[in-house]
Structure formats: C-alpha cells, structure tokens
Length: 168
Image 1 (cartoon, rainbow, N blue to C red):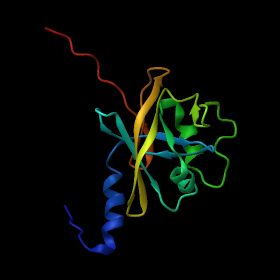
Image 2 (image 1 turned 45 degrees about the horizontal axis):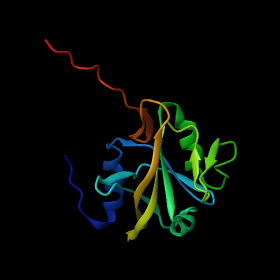
Image 3 (image 1 turned 30 degrees about the vertical axis):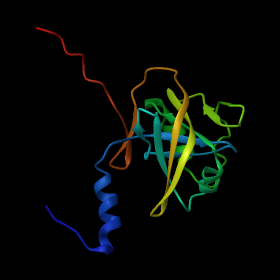
Image 4 (image 1 turned 90 degrees about the vertical axis):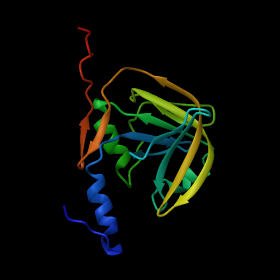
C-alpha cells in the first residue's frame, strides 16, 4: 500500500480515499427556498436530539444556509437518484417540478423523500472550506420504508438489508 503524506497531495488523497466510503445521500433544504444534495449528514446526539451537515462555504446555497434558523434533511431512497442529481446541479432552480409542502416559516419538505427530519439551528462553525451546521430536531416523518440511496466510488448505489436471522 502506497502512503502519501505531503500537503500537496492531501486533498487528492482525501478525495480518493473517501470514494471508498459509502455514504447516505440526503437533500438539505432551508427557507427561501434553497437546497442541495449532501452526503455530509450525521447524527450527533440523542439527548438532546442533534443532527449536522456541512456545506461548502463558496457554494451557491451557503448564504441561504447561513441565514436560516431551521433546516430539513431528506433521507433519499433508491428511486430518488434523479432528485439527488437535480439538487446537486448548479445554476438551475432545483425546486422547479419538485413536489413539496412548506412549513409556516417557509421550510420546504420534499414529498418524494422516504424520510425527513427538520431541525432548529443551534450552532454554525467554520470548518476549512466548509461550514458545519448543527441543529436540534423538532419534527420528522417516515413516508415509506425504502432501501437507502447511497454514494460510493463516485456513483449511486442502494443499500439492501440482509434476510432476517432465524433461530435454530
């Protein structure tokens, strides 16, 4: 195994290595509306119920994310790769043709996502070329049980559950 340690290769090494890490695909939305596809979603704490995501500080949605008091994380299913692509594309209105409802504060909740959580922002931290956002969960729902959409090795894959274990 080749080891690379120089600063000049650190970013390339991180990109190449993290392609080997399968990550759930989500769409983050904020009032405006604004939204983007992310694999940086994470659970932080159960008590209190905290979740987080990161957004590139120079992205087209970073300003809206910095202004937002709330956000929603939409956990995508196997049939949502087109939706993920739409929200990953720059220079387009990502919400055109996207079925959704809006919370009273304007937070969009996407109808096609099998599951979602909304949260009130409790912290924002600069993190290199990104902004880390932490929120306390205030609502959520599961619309359907569906295999998760994941990103691995630069492409979409779906998670499948192994058959249940049987006694005996």
